Length: 165
Image (cartoon, rainbow, N blue to C red; front, side, top):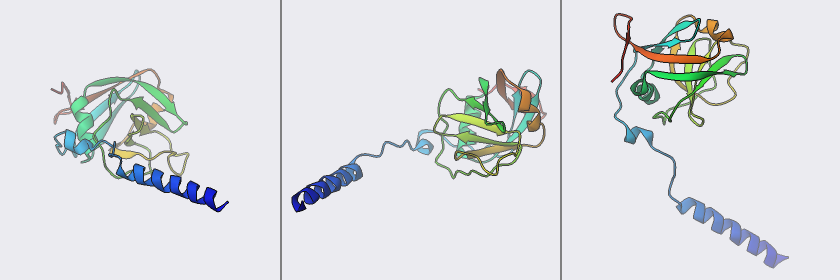
């Protein structure tokens, strides 16, 4: 019995040692992209019946998203409180996450990679951690009944849509 315990313990310790010495496969996104502070930049979310103006924050993920615009994606219902959109690639993000949200918050679920905008506050917290990207001042609640295609576009200082180059 003592020999079996020692063998099991040895295998466990060897496994831990191997895991600790393996290279870290996490991507350090912030080293792969040039960061530009986009705080205050406005983007427009357009569905068939609704337009929502979102003000971005200063996160690396928001900067990464802005570099991908314009985007067309399919809206996905997320537990009757948010609309999701799957991005074509992951955003740059090593930032703090949260499960706190309020109506109008715009965030990023980095493990899928999905964007989300919250249109209802029926839950106390989100189910998964999100990286905050910005906030819609008004109109997010109008997304409740939307489906189909959504377009995200950069807005200029005059409130007009621009082509991001």
